[in-house]
Length: 441
Ligand code: ATP
Image: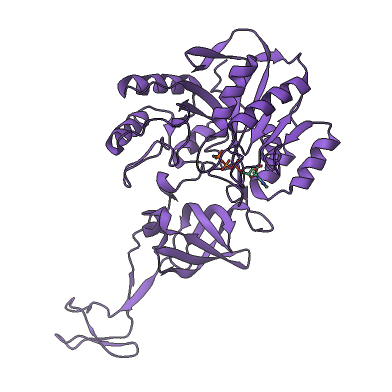
């Protein structure tokens, strides 16, 4: 069962709605509820373009608690079957969506999909890099006999269907706590302390931006979410959530761990033949123009990608990352990762693979007395002290204040899907891939 597009910038969060679906259906959760981020460049998105799905049924085997709803544990089962009626399930979910979604907002167009299996990953891949039409997704669902329901325009079926086809090649987790309809607003300093505390646990990521004093675990908008902590190990996350609640006297009404594609770089297509608007790519090439800036503090540069000039950008919200970006020089070999929007790659990560070397000609040191000579003409240098004459200049390598390594935008500007450098080793080691490693049940 999948659902999307129930919230607005004024309130609600589809992840909360999912907790309500679990509560009201009373069915067991098989595996984890899944929070799947899709194309970050979609104009319809409210915030982070996240869609939700969960496998519900009658679980078998040893259950594991993955959260609490109104003081009662939510159990996850490794296996299970759904022996109910799909139409009945759809009708319960429809009632909940009707009741909770912010349909008064013209940009809220809920969609629900009830499917027996998971479609192949084609839809997921497309939904990460393209803008899909409602019509094409509806046809896809009809063709495969998958039950769906639309409220208002029903655009949510796009995200809902795409989330079902997420193949979980790389996974992370998020523990989200709630107080409906809005939690009490804590003080800024308290939020910073809580985010720093969450950040002190290994295996968590994107909690806190120290340089910009931004506590990223708290939502920017008013929603039922108190905080969300991201990590690679669900058992550890559940521990971090409990500790945070205890230390900061937070009493969530609900708390649930979601399996997600956040921090996986799933949106990035490596070295593509073609670059299309709204797609996200990793491109390697040489910088062909030194960076320049425009009013508002936005920086741009040009790179050559297989003979095509591509504009790359570091916009104002990327804060201190712009200092790194501005130090690029023509000839640098770089790999840039980011989305292609408004004819520029919005840089998320930058690797300086090989830096260009720049040399300046200077008058040589005198071979006889060692003092610096004076230029008298082209390839004509004289020593004012001893009168010695030399023809060849010296070359001096200009220092470059940039290392050959990877750089990333700060947490405050980081996209949900972007893999933090901190996680690269985790995924490279094979952990978090196809659900290996960080399994709770
Ligand atoms: P939140 O993060 O608060 O849950 P959101 O940012 O996920 O909100 P939604 O309210 O869910 O935003 O709206 C996103 C809309 O865009 C949904 O209707 C979803 O179906 C649709 N959508 C998602 N991906 C695509 C895509 N690739 N092409 C076209 N539509 C898409």
